[in-house]
Image (cartoon, rainbow, N blue to C red; front, side, top):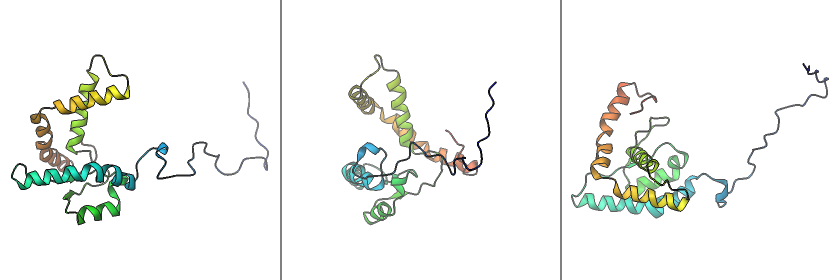
Length: 173
């Protein structure tokens, strides 16, 4: 058995060891860094896809085809930006307040789970990014409306269950 000898005083390293994974420079334009900040979320998601889709839903609601339209975003950093919250309210977007560290009750998460389950059952399983995207879109388009409607109709029951559990973050239903 080998014993480790004590390092003499004065030769001991001081402070914390250097972190080899530390990111020292961040750049909004360099997408290789990964992640998404509020600016990229606004430019790439909100302006290009979310807002046009939201306006389309609002227009159909005004024609009596749907009920009231709300935007639900979780507590992710890009969704909490002061700029985006002001932009949503100035644009007339009805946003539901979603508390931090809350259970993930957003009905779209149930849709993603549905797609993932059906994707896992595919034979042959898609092995490339392109094949996976094609399969994902096919599953998305084939989801019966009664399934998605049931996810959204269950929201009041799920909210009541969370409330019954004193609004804790342990609910998984």
